[in-house]
Image (cartoon, rainbow, N blue to C red; front, side):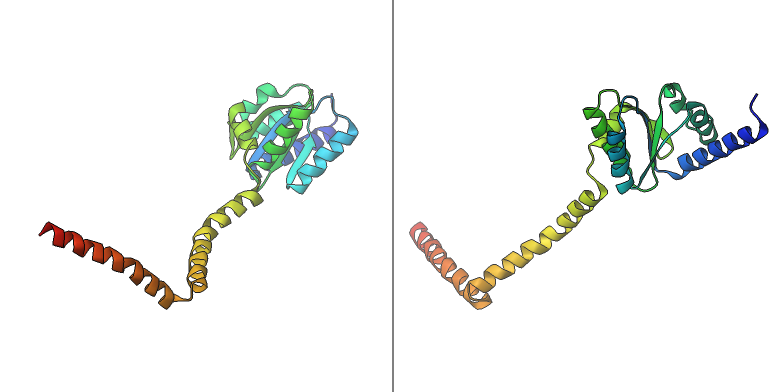
Amino acid sequence: MPSQSVLEQKKAIVAQLAERLKSSVTGVVVCYEGINTEDDTKLRKELRENDVKYTVVKNTLLSRACDEVGLEDIKPVLEGTTALATSDTEYAAAARILCNYAKDHENFKVKTAYLDGAVIDMDTIISLSKLPSRDVLLANVLGAFQAPIASFARAVQAIVDKGGVEACAAEAAQEEAPAEEAASAEEAAAE
């Protein structure tokens, strides 16, 4: 039977895991079997750079933490080697990095994931993994906001290049004059 100090340590780990699960917006549970140290180091570095916390966890401790936070649907996959990747701010980073990593490593598998406190299915995990990074999404939004302004600036520049508003007005008047003459000629022919 474990000693009282070991039980206290395990309770503390479960409490930390439960707090981590509660405070994160997303998390991915993976089987990390069969990866070497060099690949694992590269993976951890990429996850750290994207503000994703990645740790190897004991299945029984993660299971108890899941019970505490209402993520019981994760428990059926808690067997074999298990690692947990969580993010407090970025929704797609963990799924994107780990799913891409799993494509290149046969034994590395994504088991399950949760999003905003609810367990999600594999199709949702794969869809989440295909989202671009937060920076790319922000750049796309800013580009969409900037497009009308850029179009207006190009139109103004075209007017300036033609010699200003007066030159454009004179050109428009010249184009309208033959049209008015043709309309007058049609009216005269109709009478």
